[in-house]
Image 1 (cartoon, helix red, strand yellow):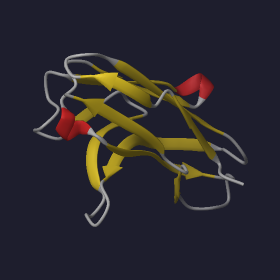
Image 2 (cartoon, one colour; image 1 turned 60 degrees about the horizontal axis):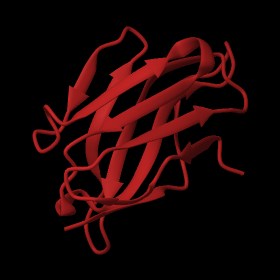
Image 3 (cartoon, one colour; image 1 turned 30 degrees about the vertical axis):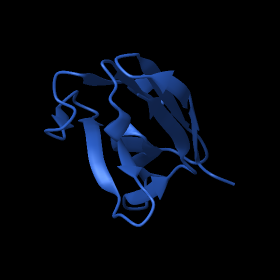
Image 4 (cartoon, one colour; image 1 turned 180 degrees about the vertical axis):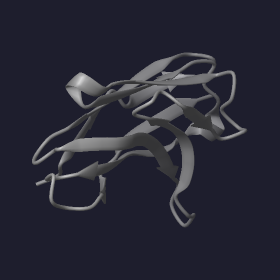
Length: 121
């Protein structure tokens, strides 16, 4: 059972918008950062955007100015608002979290199962 549950993917026309959501569950003492990555068939998974628990964000150059990542630490949730979508944004988007399950454990990295975003031209 995935500890990260994504939602919000789907089909959208170019220049349209979508908003992805990801909720972390399971044992969570703290979360250091959450983020979104994407992967096309036959390609490596690449970073889209990340956000730390202090609110610091990082974006891939290809999405700067179009995508916005936000997080709500109290709810262990991260969002990705995607505007001005392009056909090349078509990918499976994966949620990622660096979490500490218990006070006595270190941080582990967990992944969601992915949500497909398809942008038609």
